[in-house]
Each structure stands twice: as C-alpha cells, then as structure tokens.
Figure (cartoon, rainbow, N blue to C red):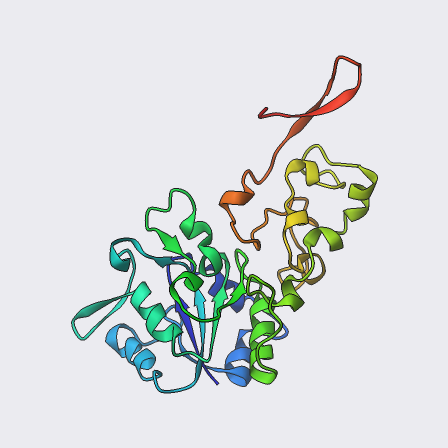
Length: 274
C-alpha cells in the first residue's frame, strides 16, 4: 500500500516522534508495511519534482497521513505547500485534493485532529483540524506529539484488518478507550485523598492540575522514548495533550495551592491565583 505523509501548519513534531519509534520503528514501516511516496522533510526531491509524486497518485490507492492544521484565512494563503505549473498550492487545496481520494485518512497529532497549538488563541491563521475541511471519515490520533505506536498500530490495523473500532470522536478505541487516571501508577493516592502540593512529590498531582482524569489514552502502560518513562513517572502532571481542545481548554497546565486555616480552625486548600 502506498502512503503519503503530508505536513501542514505545525512543528513537524509528529514525524520526528515517528522517527523515534522502536519495535517496530520507522525503518520497518517503510520496508515492510507501506511504500512512503511523499514526505517533504525526508524525501530528496524538491519543488515540482516532489509534487509530481503526489499528483501521480491521484488514480491509485493510498493512505493519507496528515500532521498539522489547515489555515483557512484568506483562502488558505497562510500556508503554501508548493508551486505547480506556475501556481501556488495551498495546504487547504492539497488536503481537499488528496483527502477525498485516499483509501484512509489519518489525522496524526493534536493540530491535525482538532487544530491543537496551531489553532490556539488567538489563532491568527484561523487554523482548523482536517476533519473540518473534508466530507468523509478521518481517523483521529490526537496527541502532542502522537506516540509512534499509536500511528503504527493504527496503520497496521488498517493494512491487515481494515478500519479499527472508533469512538464518537473518530479515535481508535484500542488506544483511546481508557482514561490515563484509571491506569495511573499514582491512582491509589487519589483514592486515599493524598495529594502533592508541588511538583516532585511522589503522590497524586490532581490538585496541581493534572489532566489525567479527563484524558483518554494509554500513556501509563505504553510510556514514551522506547517505553522507558512518561510524564507522571517523571514527576510532572499530565497536561492533556491527547485530548480534544488542547492546549486552550487544558490551561493552566500546573496550578499551585496553599493550606490555610479557616474561621473554624480547619485547614483548607486555597489556590494561589484565587
């Protein structure tokens, strides 16, 4: 199966994350799973020669993986993906051209899924996720960045079994079906009401603004960097990067509180910004 990886308005963090994957890794993907036809950060061709690889696919079967959001302002002129026969091709035009022809479309990372950081306030480019500009199903893999296993696992499912079971947001249930909070290694502290008051303490970071209870993915058991560690294990709270609305609805990422005595002499928690 041929595959296109298209980078739109973003930071290229998802292709970097994919390159850091292991067991299987990127080399396995391009040698055993798909024929990667286009990825402008990795391919040697450039300019119209590179775009020829894309336009040659129009009548063939391919999977489209997209990272980055789609700028809509001024007809999409805030992002040009290349020039073709004397005309500038916008990201909006390219995603609509390829997205309607692909066998499957995968939104890789937060920006492609729902706008993410690229659509964060005040969003001067009026960026949106790719589902907003396509009239078809898009498989959503939110995360900042997307874990390489999330992408490769979804890709493998598409190739060998077809489309995986998706939730109401278009995310694969086998990845996004359970909250981080439910499988967190510090869950027992939450159940006992033992909370950290500052980063670095070994107890539950819910009172510091941890977004694990509202974020559904498998970070606690999958972990990152060849499955060595993840944010909570490294003493930082979950910031909800794999949840729709990140980053705006997840801010502030860390909140501090102090313990003060109320009129009845009881200790109460007071957030420092209140």
